[in-house]
Image 1 (cartoon, rainbow, N blue to C red):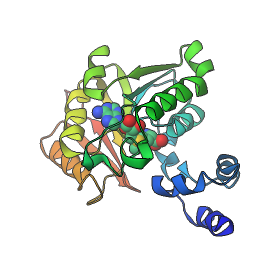
Image 2: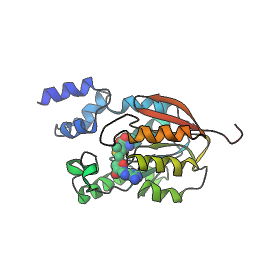
Image 3: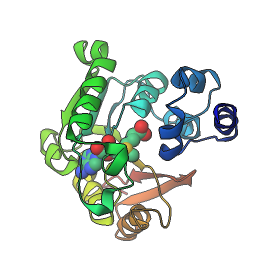
Amino acid sequence: MKSNAIHAVVRCRKMSHVMRTYLKHIPGYRRLIRLLKVGESSRDFLLKAMPTNSICAEIGVDRGDFSRRILDIVRPMKLHLIDPWKYEQEQIYKNTLYGGALGGSQAHMDKRYQKVVKRFRLEIENGQVVVHRGYSYEVCNDFEDQYFDWIYIDGNHLYEFVKKDLELYYNKVKENGFMMGDDYVTGDWWQGGVKKAVDEFVARGGVTVIQIENKQFTLKRDSSTK
Ligand SMILES: C[S@@+](CC[C@H](N)C(=O)[O-])C[C@H]1O[C@@H](n2cnc3c(N)ncnc32)[C@H](O)[C@@H]1O
């Protein structure tokens, strides 16, 4: 089982969250993943295109693995981390990281939040990282219009939530800034909600599709003079 799991790591360019759950029983698995340079690398191309010293947000943080990539690759001036770390009990969330067995319980989610705060303690102290514990649609009011250079949307993937994230955060992103996000696919537990919301949002105008690759979407907010 142990060696099978290690081979699975090597083969996978991006590990699914479910696979992570199994692998984490192997002692030292995080270090192994880092050493093998697998895991998050399939999304690094997004970050390499983002400007250093930018102001950005990640909606949906979980354990902060992608947040770490953002800090290491982009080296932003300010990174806002937005997540309620709330255990969701409804059936629809039973296969998510924040429901069912993977979420565990509210006590687990509280611990996850505390670990993120600990993980980014230095960056929080020096003001580079700000953690907002709350739903993206609530936290949105914390920001001025046209504040962000770019945002990454990876919170609740159900259609109505992604739709709301796109609509609410559109005004918070600067003209010519970027709205990116994960899991632009059909199916899965969110029943293609990300893809549907993004496609509708693009069709209504005001953004240009820059790229769709590896399940990642990148939209650019058009300038008002376009
Ligand atoms: C897929 S995980 C995020 C993974 C993370 N971006 C990464 O790549 O490592 C989804 C996260 O979204 C959070 N979440 C769920 N609903 C949310 C909402 N309405 N606003 C913000 N975050 C939400 C969950 O608590 C969970 O931590």
